[in-house]
Image (cartoon, rainbow, N blue to C red; front, side, top):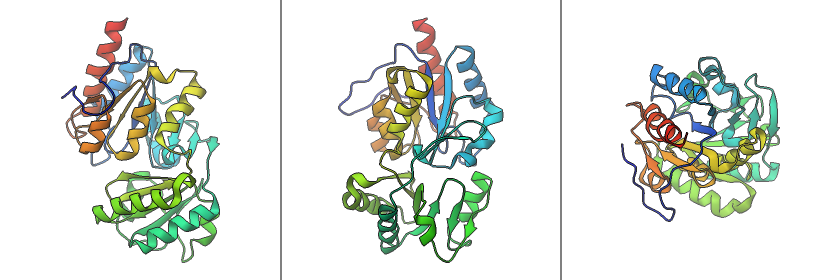
Length: 285
């Protein structure tokens, strides 16, 4: 486990930790989407130390609900990278939908780039082909099935998130850059997995999640520790008091973090809590 990083911001520790905000896939859970006993114990230890715990993901809030009971979550769930913020009982607190024109343009550009297109609204996940890559895996992950439709046009009028999907990871990265150039401030485009490109409202990004939870929970952003593994987690590193990258993160993500822990297959999340959060908090107290 390394505490080194490169980049403009100097490494630091949050002097006071009031909230830990964690990404889910690639961070909190293993590659098989398993929440380990040690990860559960780490969250319990946070609460025993008086530190709140929250999760954020490109998943819909419904797709994170299976974590509420085992982690005894009390803080809001920030789904769709902040597109929908919901209470643990899934009651919607805030929703940020895409502008319909931006949604149509994004979907057309993703299709032109050769990516499959999925559309999420506040309740449904809509696709064209049930046999397309990653559909079955995603349904198993989020624990609910997609709605198959030949025409996504109506869904684009109410889209909270659009996903471009491809196993050509370079194609996904190129599409991310192209969408950022073409949509500008009209949307946020970031990879939540090497094969997923998420397009959301411009205020629906993980940096905004930090600010939203800071407001809802009355916690200064400087007292928030964030943990993640993908490029869409970089914005939450920048907004929080301390950013921790997973060992399975890419070089870009590690360079943006203050600290680096082990990967999600070797208890990197729990180790980060034990060493960097509870160790620091214990010393401060």
